[in-house]
Image 1 (spheres, one colour):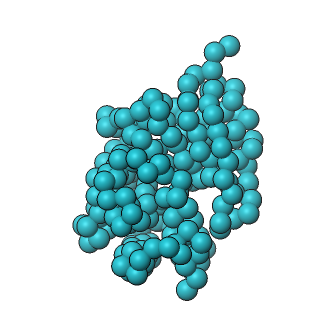
Image 2 (spheres, helix red, strand yellow):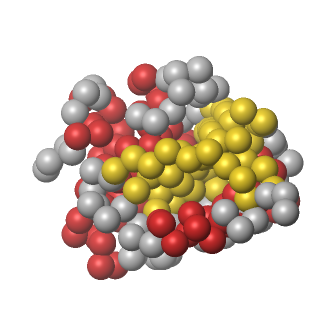
Amino acid sequence: MELGAPLRDVSRETIDRLEHYQSLLLKWTDKINLIAPSTISTSWERHVVDSAQIFHLLSSGSTKLTDIGSGGGLPGIVVAILAKEKMPLLQSVLVESDQRKAVFLRTVVRELGLSVSVKADRIENVTETGADVLTARALAPLPKLLSYAVQLLKPDGIALFQKGRTFEDEISQARDAWDFSIDLYPSHTDQEARILQIKDIRRATK
């Protein structure tokens, strides 16, 4: 198994936790739709390594991360596993409205002893605000994600969104309704994808 660049400097214990998580992800996918069947054979790189990239963009002072539309825990669970070793003060909140997926997330959190709480509710109903970091993967178009960001982030917080080949179009569309600062980072797992690091988010004034 190729660890991938985002995982080359982690301990064996952390790799063991990631492998445990991967095994649970694949086991539960037989019952509920956590990942696409077409990605099962490449789940380590496609999901685990891909999500691990987010961890390396966190500020060292971050203490609260909110992951929305967590689904199978991507990237939220992967980031929490890495944080257990490298950022033990980071507390994560995973928001997932599907009750079955929330049960899965709580199972992973319990088995791996992670500093994570799971909110089984719609994002619009979440009252835990003031996150240092907001993450999302394959959830919604960027304009919608930015509306969640202003709801859940503290004023100087940062959003980290993983986007595929349409990222430029989404940024352009988002500019119609929002003002923001953005940095783009290449993906280690998809040359057409980017990680969007966004801050200073506010409604555009016409």
